[in-house]
Image 1: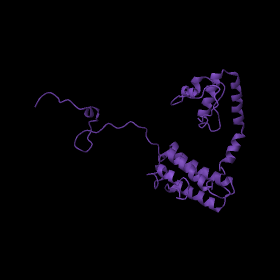
Image 2: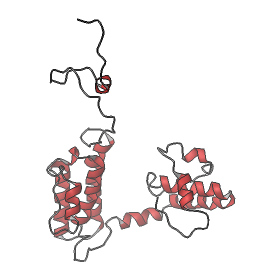
Image 3: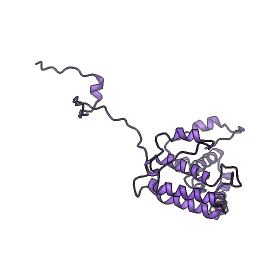
Image 4: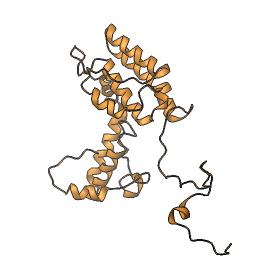
Length: 233
């Protein structure tokens, strides 16, 4: 037997030397990808959204409007499915049935808690709108079930304070004002109706600290000063 080691292939060099059950003693290196967030870990944020927030939203919507028996029955069914049942596809008569069938392939029949969190959250709101008759042909068609809560928040003092902070931006240089407004748009969802624009937030290094990626340079190239265009952030 020769004392020289045979040269290894690139696949062998990059493989983990653990047994994969085939007898080769080699397992391919695991792929480095983000883990899918589910809602089946009690105490996690995703779990709390499905276990606590979704039932509260259903009750809130139910109490806000004089819905009829059909809407109440549909909301009760959604609550039971969220808490104890499984994800069901939309009825074939729904206009977006085919699209959601594609998006939900492999997920229908699972517990809501065992589906990817972001998908489950989106589909929950679709089912909630459907339960209230938003997509139907009756009197509730197109009626936003969250409209009363949105109007109440927009009339709150917190919004007035944030708008006053925006007024203060009139006295800062144009580039700093643009950066502050961009950050306000980016963080608006995280702060609900708060713009996250306060005194001192005009510096580029403050509101940008938590950004995963900053494509603002590209944005300003696509939206030059004075351009007649609208950008949804």
